[in-house]
Length: 400
Image (tube, one colour):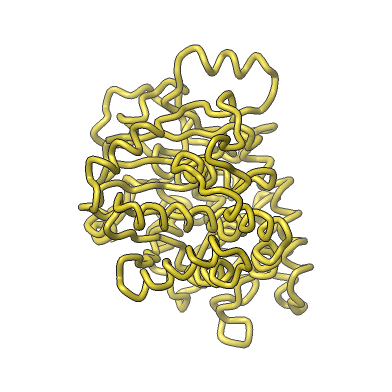
């Protein structure tokens, strides 16, 4: 494990000394989106977890205590010494243990909340609940739902263009979009894209045709399915000779994809009644057997730190890829730094630390926004809508 920065006082990322000073996003600001996540979203999440599985009184008490501590001024305590990731967390939290939850940066605190939730449900503890995903019922219900069936069936209607497949992967976590795409209509409004480097993304892939592409997944279910369809296109078109799909090593952030979720999604594709979806599932299944599609699940993907603090083994493993595609809001925050950057801060400068050319496909669901045209943020602000956090805007950004 490399030396990691103190999360309470993180300087500007290395190699970009001329960036403007940008404070870290925190959870102690009244009325902020970050504070709302803890005080409005997390109580609903705890209720959902308790409704989904028959957890006993001890687990119920631990979950209630976690909610009270994280919203009521409780003190941060490191995980138990016997937990498999306890040593990593003790280092990741250096400078924070013994301080109040609301003194921690948003990215760090939100990540640790989910780590503590797993512990509260018994995920790490000896006994019958060890290794049981508390979010599995919600993920399974979504994957088996009629919306997914309709989206998979739509693949038989027309062969989507590669741009439509990219849009499906971008908007895959929105219930009103996904696979309802045709070759001539990607189902989204150009006005909803605050940045669109899709031409650069395809250019990088064409230039490195036949190389390795890494895709760092975000959510399971309805988002992972279009990711897998995009991967199939990269392999069958020859844009990629190999693909590594990086997922979380354990349940994380409600619906983040794990290896088990990936296998469930592949099974859903293979057993779909439509010919197109089933064929994609079979090709990907065989690709895993042949080693042209592999799965990675490095522990750092559950870390509370930005990607510029990634350990050497992960950096070495990513190096050599033609392109790394990062999916979703959390990966974007970790890529550029979870800070109140001026929205025109150059994306390339903030991602210079990443070991490969990198693309991010993100639906905006948090305060961070960078790399935008100067006239765009004022126009969006003038609408009076929370465009940074409401999931109605998205971006495709690329650093070659």
